Amino acid sequence: WYASFTCQTEIADAARPAGEPIGLDLGVANSVATSEGELISLPVATEREQAKLVILAQRVSQKELRSKNRAKAQHKLNLYRRSILRR
Image 1 (cartoon, helix red, strand yellow):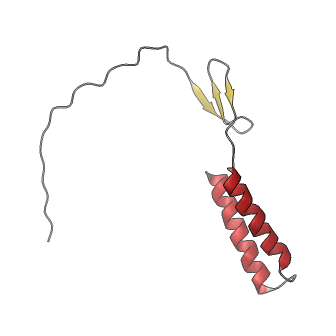
Image 2 (image 1 turned 90 degrees about the vertical axis):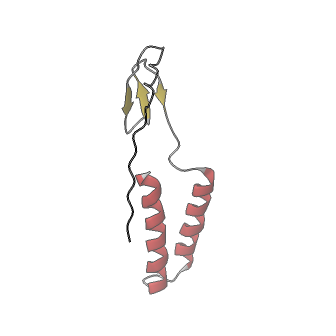
């Protein structure tokens, strides 16, 4: 069973910002550059994420070379690195 409801409501217009507009540019070397010339560098990984990366890398190094367990540990490390980089 499906039920669908519709209604009409009045929404007030949003207030315009009072300050001057600025432009933002997302880059590679600097995370954000504003039109006023300010450069903002955001951290790629937090301290907690860095600690987890270290733990995962240690697990990889403790496994025997060319073993399936090492491949699984390396895969987990690669997935975690990719999730951080894609953010």
